[in-house]
Length: 540
Image (cartoon, rainbow, N blue to C red; front, top):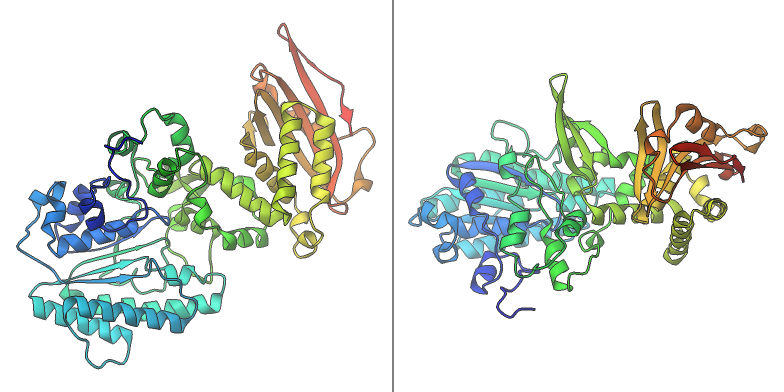
C-alpha cells in the first residue's frame, strides 16, 4: 500500500485518536453543528458498527471545548470556544450485561467515572437515578453552564437479553428509572443525545412533554453516520484506486434512511485492510439468532423479505413483549428503506435487503436455522444445486432437492407446524437459491398473476411454481397442478427471448405427509427463428 496514504481508523472511535494520528476522518461536523446550535434532545437509531460511538465522542469533545481537534473541520469557525459545558457520558457500547445486578454495577461504575472526570461527588445516594440527578444539578451549578448528557447504545442491555423476556423486562425497568432523570432535570440540560439500535417504548424517554426528537429517519441527517459514495471517492480515493465501484456498491452500499444511501464504515475499513477481499465483514460480527427463531415460530414467508411494504408505525417503537420481526430487522440493518409513497394520506415504506453482503449472509443464516444440518453438508447441496442449474440437468436438480428435504432432521418438523404450509418449502428453496448468488425473484408478477419464484443464473431462467398437497395419494395420474398453473396463466411469457441459455417451466408438488417433493414436471421452452415450442412434459 502507498506509504503516503493516511492510516485507516479501523477499530478506533475517539476523535482525538483519529486527529492526532492523522487517520482518515470524514468531517460530519456540518451536521453536528446543525444539531448543536440550539438546546436540544435527540435520538438516533442506526445499526451496530455504524459509527455511532465516534459521533457521540465528537459531541463530547465539542462541548468540552477541545478546540485543537476541530481546527481543520467545518465547525471550527462556527463554534463559541469560550463556553465549555460539563458532559455526562453513559456508555453501554462495550458492555455485555446479563443480569440486573450486572447492570446496576456497570451504571455505578459509569457514574463514578463521570464524577472523577468532573471533579464532583454525588454524596450519599440510594439509587443510580438519584446519583445521576444530583450530578446533573451539581455540574450545572459548579460550572455555571447547562449540562450535556450523552448516552451511547442506550438499549444494549435490553437487546443483549431479548431472548429472555424476564431479564429483558428487568433491564428495561432499571434503564427506565435511570433515563427518567433526564425529564425531571430538563431545566439543567443544554443538549441530550442518545444512540441505539431500537426504539423501545415503555422506557420513559420517548414520551412526555420533553420527549426526544427522533432524527433516525430525518432526511437532513441521513448521512450523519456511514460513508457516502463521495466520501469513498475522495477521502478514501487512494485506498480504493482502481476498485470496481459497481461491485463495491452492490456488496456494501444501500443503507437508506430517507436520504442518500451510505456504506457501513466497518465493511469499508475491513475491505481495504484485507486487500479488498469481498467478505461478510459486518454480518459475521453478530447473527440475528433471535430473529430467526421468531420467523420460524410465526411461519414467516422468507421470500417476503425481498419486498415488504409497511406503514410508519412499524418502523417506530415496540415493546419487548410484542416484538415485530420486521421492525427489528429494519432497525438492526438487515432491511432498509427502498422507497416511500403516500397511500390514503399515510406514508408507506418499501423495505428491501440493503446489499449483497446482507442478502447472502442472511439467507445462509436462515438455512442453518431452517435445516439444522452441518455447514459442510449444506455446502455440498449448494454446489450440487448450482451445477444442476447451470447445466440445466433437471433430473439431477429434482434428485438433489429430494435428498435435501430428506436430510432435514425430523425434529424440524415435529417441533413446529411449519411443514404444514407451502411457505416453508418456498422459504427453504428461496434461501438456497439466493445463497448461490443467483437472481431470485420471489412472487414474480406477470399480467396473469404471480408465479412463486423465478431463478436466473448464468443465462438460464427457471420459472417455478410450488404446490402443497396432503399426501401423494391426492396426485392425479398425468397431472401436475403447479405446472398446469404456469401454463394456464402464461407465467413464462415475459421471459421469452430473454434467456441466453434456455428457459424452463418447473412445477414442484410437495406432500405434508411425506415432507418432501412428491411430483416434479418441467417444460423446456425452445425458441427457433421466432417460433416458440415446448418440449413434452417430463415427469419425475
